[in-house]
Length: 458
Image (cartoon, rainbow, N blue to C red; front, top):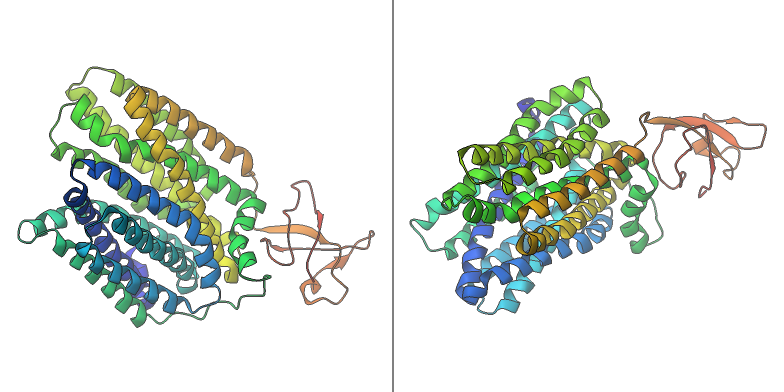
């Protein structure tokens, strides 16, 4: 898997991602302490609002950023977003009002919502071979998981010698280093963007791709399954560890670490598995495993606290991490298969936005249910959501899902360049087959039973 790091451009981009993630992790710790300094006992409310602002920024800004990424040089856009994030991080230590925190968090997360999909859309250009791209997806998953384990430890080490304000300086250094690494990477020229009817049409393109492509609709359902299972880990771990098991604060890190270990081990195994079986054969079973794990969590949280149930909880969290990684990591492969090269920024931006909309739904659900009805009920409800999402994904994603599809064109004139390999049918349409994606020549998906006429834009 590490062989992809021999590619200089990818090595610089991956390192940029890693250092930016560390910076973000330091900012998360520092923001908690800043909220406590400003709001005191209301710090949790401030952080909860900041998390909601983060998700709203991701959902609202990513599609617009995807449209922008198709018109601006990607390196320029990524560097500009890194510099924006660095400036915001350096400003945060000087705020003394809650509303100022909210404004700066929105700016920080809006820049992240522009940077991340652009970065994701650049990797397929840098690593065009599917095997290399699969390895890159696993590397990216590992980077996220290692950050979740490494950043809190680094923050604790730094806080032993400096005040928390300096953590924001570390965040800024991470973003500046990321910008420098992106500048130093020689990126291939992306495919030219064809006119799409203005900025709004470009912003809506990614959502249209998801709406019209069966495997992408399934991917969105799979994202909901992951969000349902992941929300109970990220939102409710602290309460179940401290209130149910009556364990010290350090045990919270241990439980979250179990999730990270499960995710990392799966990311390491996936390249070999994906080389032998298809994405669908891995992603769907993993999604169906998540509600099964939540059913076990229901029993664990309802049983008396003890050594056995504590070990079972750690195992359950590791399984949630493994299942989530098995669903999320191959998602980039599906997007790459389902969009033209020029439309990849819009497609990744749409996935970024829509997947975070799922978290925006499940985060408060996990919090409100746990506070009002307890963890067993929360696990049952989120398990039902995960099961419904996995079932929907299985129904939406055809078991036979080839890349090349036979289809008809009804309104392209004879001699059109796109019909170079097509043949005329008895009904006056033109029929051919090729790697099929939704684009300006293909607005609907062919029926599984055979070629389907569809409107095209000449």
